[in-house]
Image (tube, rainbow, N blue to C red; front, side, top):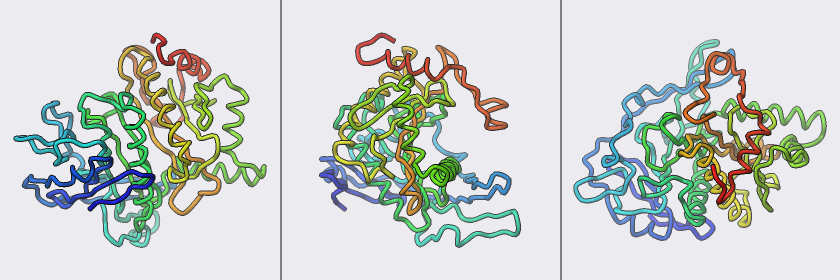
Length: 374
């Protein structure tokens, strides 16, 4: 099936041999969709539950089938490479630009007609419901040895278009309450495939972090009559000591209370609820600003940085007036050969200790612009 992904981007979808959906994005999408999946795959058997933690007031996903997922295969057996004669992969075409497909080992499971919380079971404090949702993989490039930082402006724009398209489609699914586009990069982070890729989760609940941000921002609105996200961005700009880069449409800064050694938040100058709300000019500038940030991170220690990068968007159908779309990027490396481990205080109590002053981290990142030594 061929369709427009919005803003002039073409997409085409196919069904893989085991029934999962795969979507190609870009000018070559229609040609790529002409290649069928020839693998003899059985239908994916996956199950998922979400269980409520009454002490923390949050849902936990239980998906035991993920124990058997692919783990760091050799480069010549990567399932995210394009297919070639004698080696069929998750992507049937011999080449692609950007591709999105349903995860073969999903944390959340697609369930047609699912109604989210309507199926909650259990008595009293021990509540359980089906882990209805969807997990997708986003391949940024067909080049196995590439990274997001290696992409051109136009390639990054195509990934952004795919994120936007999938965010809108997944948010519209029955029972989905939040969509999260993210990338885990580096073995130190825990990635199981080294090919340049990210993921998209469509949750059947509002995630704990977003719920907390919404509650805090609503209290701030009630107490001051102003928007917390707007005032926070204005305060960081006024202070200036933690701003890494500032364009016409986007500002990148190390937050005043950064949790991680090198952590940058990227906000549009004008508050937007989600990716769909970005203007063409904001989309265009984002690509340059984000690629610049990733390249600065890779210059920190002279070696590719292990990082997590994720889009924080308003929940589906709620919080759109007060929430501010933003991207959070951080690395767990704190010095050459040293990682920031989440030990007793962080993992046990959620109380972070940062070994690097946010102002120092920002100054270091400012000094790592294009052409500057690491």
